[in-house]
Image (cartoon, rainbow over all chains, first blue to last red; front, side, top):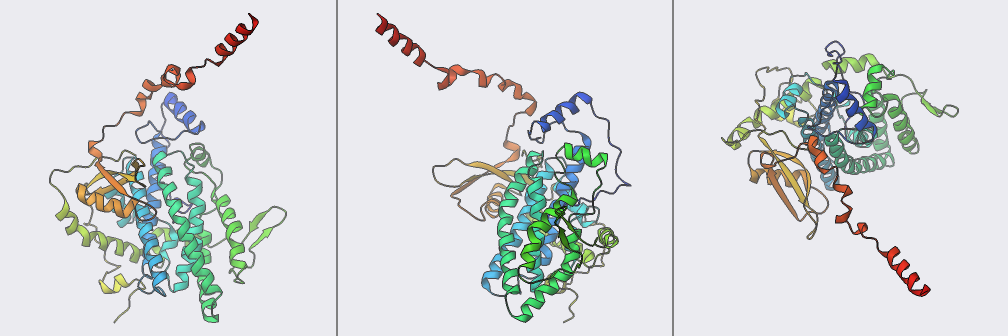
Length: 329
Length: 127
């Protein structure tokens, strides 16, 4: 799961678009227009490389940080079957991070540099993981709805232009289908259970709805920059389109269980065929990105502690004669 | 026990969320080198390239490959190869293959004789 549509790009620190060799650029764009993939050692515009590194890296960080709120519930999962499923899912998420780090590495940024940037707060991850998973029903909502939202984004991205990212996403989407199913199963069991269980899942829905509406990012105006990224098949769908697709697919699955969503304005307009909703609080969204969410500090502290406490193992295993080679594909 | 967080790690390991440790940075190669992984699904099928693992040596790479690429579904065998030992072509050199699809003399479809046979048979009847 876990890659959100929103990719944070600090506009103040963004370098100017570089002038590229027009002949190479034309060949590059023609290749993408023909539906061919770009492979690691091909020529590519500097901005294509920069955007892809940011996108794949943030996706990888989201997988690895996303494992933390759910991981806290492994010890408290209700029953052996649920515990096995949650362990398998959390292991998958960490595995997905590794696939994605490898894909980003092919663009020239080392895994160590990416993890340093995560731990030091320089590079971002999906905002939803800066909220706490307070009850077992939160695990249901994350596993069902956040995985579902991530799949909408990832299926779109798997048709992008960069070969290694597409290959990683293909494997990831295949594994995600189990995550979504098990999340839906936990969700349905609670929603059709005792009044206490129903109240628990309704409470979790109420708390998670805003982060879920934040998940695809703010409405994206078609800037020239977005247009270029879409032509290069880096960005495959607008934030608004992905959010609409998500609402169409999953709101009915919530409503059919008699549960409600905490937005009285949420409805599908039969004339435009578009969902209407109250805009979530975007100030809160930007505050959480800046590091002021309820769990930002804790998530990074846990990640930092894992690196620190694993350092002696890595050092003990390192061979004197080894040296790093960028992965081929 | 003072519960600081919903995450049991934070309380049990005494992780301090406020602590900032700017000196802690990973050095290049601290996550070791990379190995390419090849996966065989069934006996009789070929091994296919499935991805990469970071590992300190080949034995550990095989262990990580099992965790990363053989968690579900069928597997009978895995190979790992140090990325350093793979000699790969440059994509820019693909033009050396550009005339290969034209070599119809290497292809069964390049040999069509039915028209000749039909013409011959027809000629025989006309005689």
